[in-house]
Amino acid sequence: MGKATDKELIVNGRRLDGREPYHMREIKMSVDEISSANGSAKVSFGKTTAYASVHGPRSLFPKFLQESDTGILRCRYNMAPFSVDDRKSPGPDRRSVEISKVIRRAFEPVLFLEDYPKSTVDSFIEIVEADGSTRVTGINALSMALASAGIPMKDLVAACSVGKISDTLIVDLNGVEDNNSESDVGVAMMPQKDIVTLLQMDGILTKEELVMLLNLARESCKKIYQIQKQTLMEKYRGAE
Ligand code: ADP
Image 1: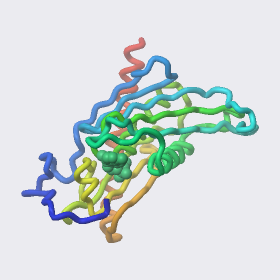
Image 2: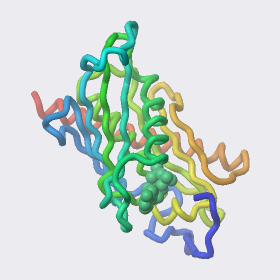
Image 3: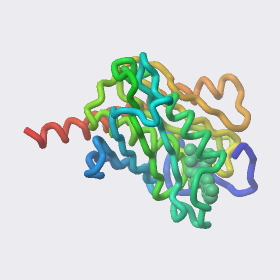
């Protein structure tokens, strides 16, 4: 990340997987994948696949963790050991602790946590296959898992990655692109309210490039939002 490479990542205007610069990978979404959860979802962007599950709101124990005037959101992002080619050592590391924290903060603005004093909403993101952009894929899944759990939300959260490779601005970085990018930017937003809830950037961009990438991210998040909405509507249509 943030380092240039000798490898040609764009050939004749196409990326190595055949995509045009602004195209996302094939997106698949489904809900209610985990029966023991109050809400769950599975989201894939190409090979990158995330499951999210939501449990609660439920009473928070031990009691000293409780907040008397609000509920809290807990979030754990984890990459399975088999999710990457070289086995990843299991358990939390600095990266997953940081990602868990930024994901929690990306969702706090959309929930009415003050309606659940002394309670917690527990959320888990498991990356079962990692080929770039795992945090944003996990965010898309968690957004749908929260909605599917029936937790009132001000808006969904939609997320995507944008970046720069071989001097070209691109959308939805895969693993090779992520590891060889000049810059990569993760964006999550509330698509109806047009509010950004996560923005992280690695590498170097000019101000103009960043503005252009943010506009691309915004357009892409709106497309992702449409698929999220469609998937959730199908769930409720199926229940009629
Ligand atoms: P994100 O997945 O959100 O883009 P990073 O930029 O930290 O987060 O990671 C980029 C990509 O690098 C991941 O999607 C994954 O494909 C790969 N990766 C991350 N951590 C590891 C690891 N421990 N071992 C092997 N590959 C990894």
